[in-house]
Image (tube, rainbow, N blue to C red; front, side):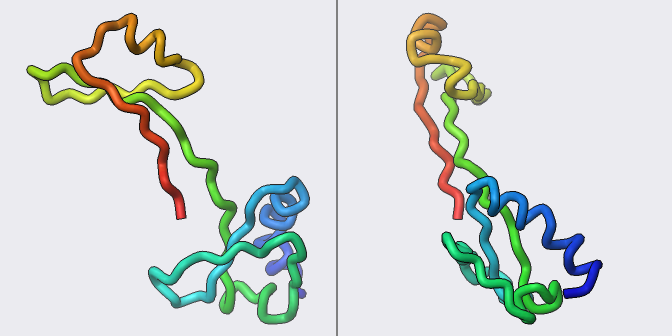
Length: 104
């Protein structure tokens, strides 16, 4: 591994060590799915080459309330857990839904 490759991989190795979900895919695969490195990340010569593999740290899904009034087109977003369902009900919105992001 070259020093420049180590600099690129360092944040991902740190995230992996902290228990976060590190994912990879082959460079140039466009919209192909990301794969988890799993519990045992094997860093062979191709895996450390940024021209061959790209990496990312999978984000945690966000949850929020989406609220709106029937006579308006504005949408209002309130993050969970900062805002409970009781608070949303207290504000007497005409409509509200709980949204959980789906991340690939």
